[in-house]
Image (cartoon, rainbow over all chains, first blue to last red; front, side, top):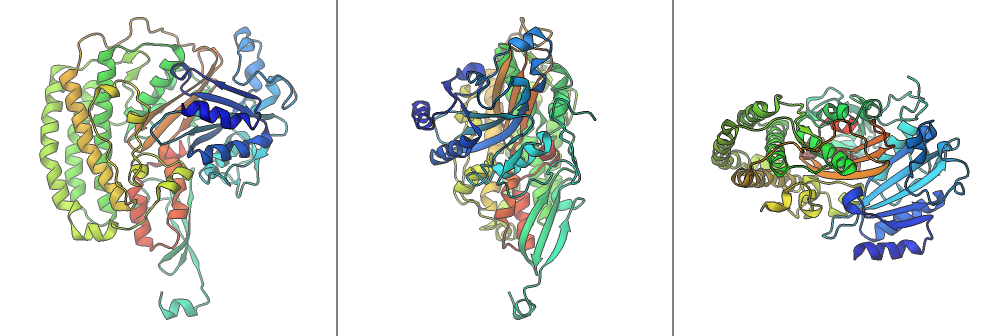
Length: 174
Length: 372
């Protein structure tokens, strides 16, 4: 019930992908893929619905094109938007994932994803909508080097204060 | 503020609380900008015990990551075990025998009580009361003995397996746990007489550090912090997992939002966990503790999976991305106190330093779980 209402509110945004998923198999109900300039609007929809932001994180898709046939065939989520936004093949992309849920009685977990180019990883911050996103985005910047434009302070949070490396990149060398 | 402070051109000074201060319970540093005894800004500085568990996850098999999950929240390790096996079982489509699920719930709840008891002792210690710590550790020791007899460890548990458990319980565990329930029920009134009704305690906690439900929502705070702000939310009820729907228990929540409310939530949760354990022992079914068809090598189908559990400090969730191999492609570990602490800067503004320490204690921080 709640899920279909939320799906409707997202339709106005015209996201890249919008689909209901099998909760038992995946652990979330609604999967939304958006462009970088839509993440703040998506956060505002969630905020107005009384949602809370549980986590923000990144995924580096560099190794997804390794010469492993199983990996090659992997249909990553939100892949219905092939090579148009942002441009380029999967292995040149990074993904930022926002996990939303709400603390009311009805359960509808929403996952908002945004793909960005690996060589210029930048997208707007949602910390203006959810102040709790501040630390999550700082952590994502620590680990992946993803820049959240408009963020108040992207200095290292968990890494040493002079860290200039991003350990969760798939080509990171210690 | 007196005349002296206001005539000194509002001068502020910076002091460092930690990273080795006993009130921070681990290596947390808080950069405090003070105006006399009042806090202008309290900025937590993290990362002193950061170990990059998420990168470790990408460099070992799904099963090999299991011990890591016991080393984040070392006071409530079994909840983290549970969160991890749950998301992997969901991804790989493994069914767990009922007896195993019951034993998971029983041991997790025992662990939750042990965690709350340690918090109780340490929290009152922060506020200047030494004796309650000894009471709490005495009782917690009984739980650790019980858990040691089945899991083999006392702190960094690694008891669950994909599809079941590592070890079955014996009659001694069942009778020992029943005896413990009886014992703690007798002791809880002592706890309340000693601390809850103590006038010093009430003056230190009542109306100190109020946090509204709305701020909790915007900061993603969960667990006793959220329930202390009047929100009736618990993953065990709102997003039922394992065999929790089979149990009859309440979710304590207090609307005041102050440190006293958070204290009361945890004290009540101890009683509710005792209820769950008691019912679990009564209903404990016979049968295997390991799924027969559980694969030796886990290779979840490519895709991403999410799973959340109610840990002692709030929602612990994992986002697991699989590329179809025996190694995780990405593991995101969402720990509750990371979000709970992120509201500290805003909540502590303008407070007296001593009150801000009471607020910090009421958040129940475990630093290795924040830093991961």
